Length: 446
Image (tube, rainbow, N blue to C red):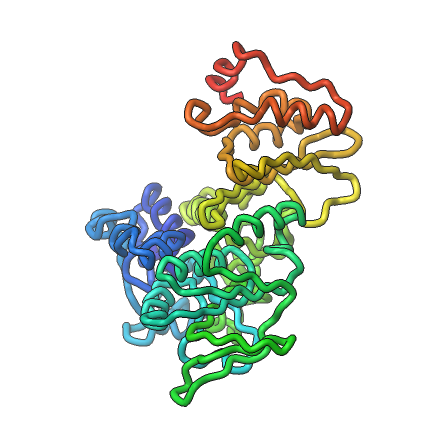
């Protein structure tokens, strides 16, 4: 019986295992040094905040794995011999594979800061990071976070939930300025500034972490010379593929493990998926490394098809993502670049009182809708996917915008104000679709 071995039990690896099992009787083994059972990584923060227990963020009961004949090994893979198709582990006898799927995920970035390895300094990615953060923040009152992205926001919310004051060092002029346009970034900053105990320092970078006599952090120094007392430093300057143990092997790597469109590597019967994979040729306008939950799931589904004999290329559709900045929901569909392309223009509508902002992007000439950022208002993914596929105009999107309201019975409506503002700004005459169309379009999913 052919043996499929998967290194990594995150969303990518586990999705691959589940779909291989659905379509084959192959022997399947998942190896992970992080934890025995799969858990929802995005929910780690809620365990720290006391909203959930760790067992609550495990989607499957422990008996699921035996029932589905998926073997689990909790160990660390020290070396891969691609010629003999053998894995060498630290505590477990060597394992032979017929097909190998590398789903080793990411690790927090470190950029060689002086003092970055002192006690009380860490990133947040794994279950072990969560356990360490529990230890490192017990009884403290001040923390510094380095990096202004989504991981940093999660860490800030976690720390503030325990009444720990947080200072955020943000290298850019605006919050998450490499991903958000300035208008959107300023809107998020305005929201974050409302939270007591959180201080944002823009255009500030970490220079040095200074310890006490026990080699635990006691303060940091910024490149501008500021000294900030703290007992914890959270490294939130992004993540990078977790592939150090493969760097000296025959496997071709760059930032990540180099893969072809079908997620295969340069080694026979070896595939890479999820955060650790890097496409040799990026797909459409997407980056070569995609470190997002849903892309890991899609790659797992794709490689499973190939493993069971139905060779398939990874073909993601339009870019989308979602997150929360504390209690401000964020969604993006299509592409809203931090700096617009030459042929693009924007229409931005916001309501500061209700904390809602919609940022539409469309082609200047054809008026083709290109993407949207939305804050404080949940909209339907499937409708924007359809509009992007059909190359709908901005006028069409606005006309039927009410159908995209996620739960129209319970959410406030701003569509009339949005359309009126668009008409005034662009000298248009868009009208909302008559009410009789809403139900029909919802039923047909537009």
